[in-house]
Length: 383
Ligand code: FNR
Image 1 (tube, rainbow, N blue to C red):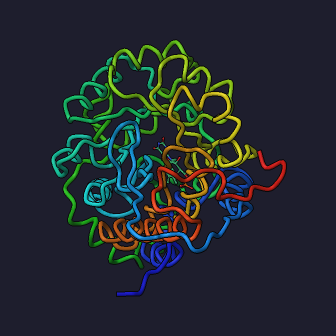
Image 2 (cartoon, helix red, strand yellow):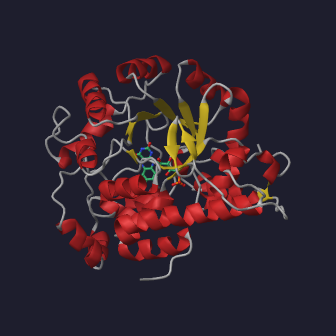
């Protein structure tokens, strides 16, 4: 067992174990990848203020996100095809999150279905919805989420059209994947991954296949998704979804104060300041830069969460100190999952928790709920 002390360690194992096309799918951003890179590098521009001679005993990172108790202000973000990074990946990640005491968000584009995850977990999880044109499908999947005991619906607003990722096109990455010859050769070297996949019996893309009209097999999925993501999505439709769901609602992909005001106005419980991990609009600012103007606009009206670029507990601390009530991690837990399955997701959470806890203490705090912007040195003109 290799010694893992940080997320980069997990990434190195992940890169060796997972087939290139799924590695590249995860480890890429759209176009020039400027936003993908800056999501992380902008965190490094914010510095922490060290304090001394402060009692650092009895520390806690426990808090609440949308009223739910969490062991730290970190949730697992929805990640498409998690089940291709590791066999039964959604179930493994959900179980690790549940044991650690943080929320897991299942994507619409998962391999394991809502029901599969519900069957293997005992606490409610969150479900991320892509808004589709087919109203019957939409009504049914919302009902399935309710039946499975999902406790929050996360509606993603920034992917009604697809950002272009060069590597995915070159790798023939589609749903279902159509590997190129080079990728087939690469695949043959990933025996651990392959053995795991042989052991799974789950239907691929179980939220859609067998549930959407005309999609009885994963091979029908490309054509279906191409025409189902509705570029006309507007606030009226979002309000309709809010009413169909009737429970806690989180709107994901908000980057500008005007949109945040609309989200607050329609009664969202939370928004996620997110540029989809740099996978959609390349050239957008990093989400950590987008945070403060949004907090100024709506911070007292709606809970503000943040994702994109978080690779450490210090990144979480910086986002929380700036005013985010919670954060989401995507790639950081996927590296763990691809590297070591459920144990790897647990390791990613442990690493982030330790970094968060110790950094909070160095900054003179014992309780994450009391951390504020005073612990930061933010460069002039950052936001
Ligand atoms: C994503 N993300 C995403 N978001 C979403 O709402 N539904 C989805 O199906 C996916 N799929 C997806 C796949 C992969 C491989 C990645 C890396 C990301 C975006 C995700 O929820 C989150 O916004 C980002 O991952 C956050 O950035 P970091 O933490 O990965 O830097």
